[in-house]
Each structure stands twice: as structure tokens, then as C-alpha cells.
Image (cartoon, rainbow, N blue to C red; front, side, top):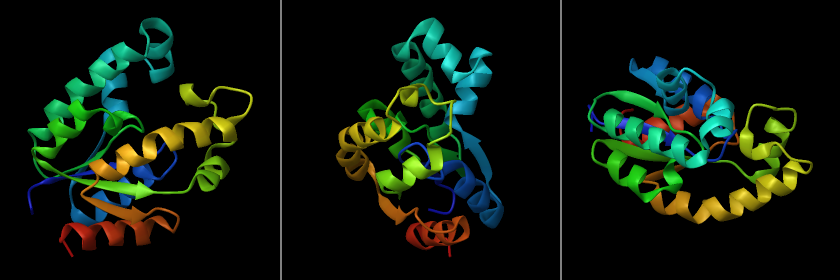
Length: 170
């Protein structure tokens, strides 16, 4: 387990990036973000990728990144909100990773993202309705994919500590 990657996943706004930074610092591991890696490889933002090429194109690039990361060791991987809703990504990452769901209820997600304008799936009139709908579609998939589930509705240091306990590196 000591060399296996730790994949943080969950709904957008659950804290993958902030908790990931804390966890990387605490464990002396490199933090990588699948969305950032896709953006770097394509030379444009996710919003631009969606607009120019569509969601399927983005999902194919995301899968390529998941496969590449699974072959590395000792990473903290912050996976995009939709990445682990696809079986092919779950299967790819499971090879060399522990999959950790950061669980946060929809009302907390809304509070965290209500003023966010960077997420393509939330660019609509009623963000709360969009969050509830997407959450309802993803929740069971997330829970099935998770090796571990931690409560993300607490300060990031506590979430990181819970993850370290869950995966056995504390």
C-alpha cells in the first residue's frame, strides 16, 4: 500500500484539490489533478474543450490521463468530478490506486459553488436543481467505485487525516 496512489474523487466542490494539497504535504507525495493535466495536454480550459470538441472528446482525454497515472506510484490524484462515473476510468485507476470518495451533501456543494462560473455542467439558471440532479445520478456510482468513503464536510486537515487513517498510512 505504501507505494499505491491515492485517488480523491467525488462531486465537484467536494474538496479534492484543497484536501489533495493537504494530503500531499502530509505524506510527501506529488499531487496531480486530472482536469489540469487534460487542460495542459490540450492547451485550453475544460470549458473551451467542451465548447470546441464536446464532452465525449474531453472524456476520452480524461481516460488517457487516468491510464497514464495508474502506472505511476506514490501520487495523490485529484480526479475530475465526472471521471469516476465511467467504468473504464475506475478499472484503469484501480490497478495501482486506492479510490477515496470525499462525500459532501448537495446543499454544502451548492454553498461552495453558488458563485462559481468555471464549471460547464453548472452554467444554468438553477444551480441547486442542477447539483441535485447530477448528484442523484452520480451518488450510487461513486459509492460503488469507492474503496473508502470519508466525510468531506469538515475542515480539510480533518478530511486528510481521515483519508490517511482509511488507507493505512497513519
